[in-house]
Length: 441
Image (tube, rainbow, N blue to C red; front, side, top):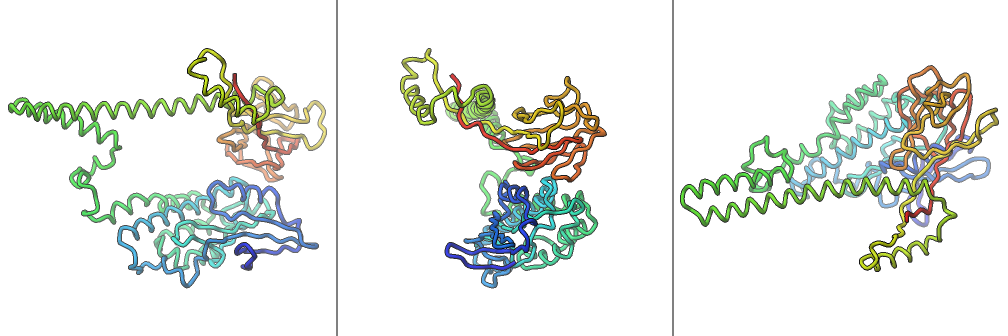
């Protein structure tokens, strides 16, 4: 890859001799990556070839000689700030390595990752990490951890940035697990890196920097939540007030009793409010989903009219509480399976809008019934979670493919818009759709 400067920023570029090497599905998965570790790819056809661009404006290569914040001998910041930054970097590095396994779940080969140290970028604080992941087609046999290449990973982990973030034992464990294609060992090493955030901060804080209350707490009580600590303080105040009353210190007794009562009331109110807010959010989310499914776009006014009506109804709510109120909700994300070739007895389109949509040949067990000798009675299930869709084949004899790659029974795979899904002998094209207007009366 090469680094170029454009009129609006810096770009890492990769040229391909043929645009057929590019994969639209891979490009969409990388661009929609929720972990925000991968730079968004922009592809452009140039003549008989293609060019892929990754903008990294505002970020620096981790090999930058002027980027001295990585140095473990840097004394410009306070000890507390250094230890906090180190813990944040460890967490970020651990999360990055965790996404390598998630790429496999999305049927993207780790071999697509560009691990050359000069092509790995970070912000001036050294906390955020950005990588280039080439949206190219990969072979089914490359969908494994070992395709990451242990030598490439070892070269990356040997640069100064990672030397100051992870230990030699952690580095060796990561490289060895990639060499042995051992995902479980890799994840254990990643969890070791990700799980040191809070411990590192606590261990490196000086006694003077801790709060007065925490200095005298036993180790077992430091893990308590704020509400639990307040309840403990309330009980302690009540106990002292009892001893004050026995000793004849009535004024002190009344003061401590009132303090205990106030703390207890505030804790109970906070807990009740928290539970109510969670329950209200769950209820509202269910209402939004139901309204998005039940009501179509054509039966309502324009979006601007809905906004105006909502404002008017809000103003008159107190004086007309018995009148219906129109509310505009966020749209529900739904999926659609479109048949790519004609099959007798199979519909051309199927909607996927439930939390769990079952696919199979049994009409009593399945939501989408497909009659075919190669399809099991309960063949697979598509689950929806926060706008994302996941395909999980059941533990039967039927085969399921994503982009012509067989997927393992009982394991969940995220599917994206435009992806090809084959169930038995029937192939669909999956698409994600949004119902853009919905209201409830």
